[in-house]
Image (tube, rainbow, N blue to C red; front, side, top):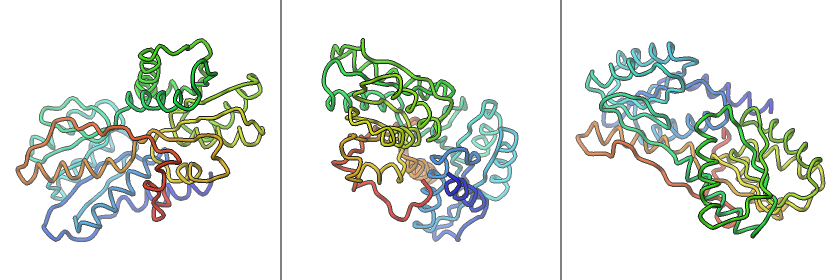
Length: 312
């Protein structure tokens, strides 16, 4: 855990530095939140990698609240950003972002909604993550299985949509949900996954599958299952795109667990940058681009492993 925190802090330090000059003169401004989760660090990794690989001049700012992000957006405009990719995590960002748009700078919002005129958005599909996870689990464990749902109410619409997709699929196929139970976690962390899964294993003698909605919580849950010596779990999902979890999926040691991840990859930020540049060059783009969910399992995980990514 300390190693991950150190990596996150290192990424935060790097984010504030403007990179190499662009071959075509395009200046990309990226307004990101502070690193509070490994997934956020992953977004930074892919954004920087894409800009460097394509000789784009970029300036990535990091903010801890709405006021700081508003100030950073002003700084990006003053820096001369031709396009801006914004990723606000707080309410009250509409005015600051609208001012960037009104200045004639294309803005593509990443992952979250902001009510601004003329804004574009690139996002994953939380609903489909739950839907595809339910399909994966039921294909693995069959009918009338005992399924633990690891909910994180503090995530707001994230878990709400993932749960909705999960249960909607079960309703579609007429699945017996009488043996499905929910456990509430405080946050998307491996420590929460470890603690809550350990409690569930003590409480329930048999669990066939675990609907975990995040790769970090899945890592903790797998640790609890392994330490308890339980062999009844035959499917566990995750969510995100974490390389550490992908390596566990590929590891024969965990093969019997049927681990998988509903991909909500931080690499989506690349699509946001591409969309912004398309708009700058006078091209057309859909106002909202939703990246469909891919299930990463032992069957295809090698396609998603990235040895260069030591951040997330």
